[in-house]
Length: 124
Image (cartoon, rainbow, N blue to C red):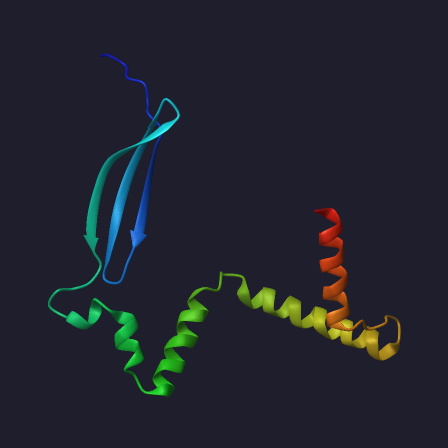
């Protein structure tokens, strides 16, 4: 059996409303070569509203859009989001306690941003 050399390849997707394009690239001589482009339907032709979910969502009443937006945002959270949120809440409480106890000095946020911008200008 003849051995063939493996060719590095990459598969990518460009997603649009209701469809996507799958693109397969191979790399030979450090140059990408298009191997194949294949469209993929992401909606059901029997239900036209599935093709443009963004537009369908805009037609919902405000309270339904808010609920949908909340669900979409929650779907972005990783499996440890609750622990992360709890840790940030604890950190915020610790910082407020330090300010209240006078162990740290609060600095105006705009002043902090000015200092950061100034340091960045000096580095460039």
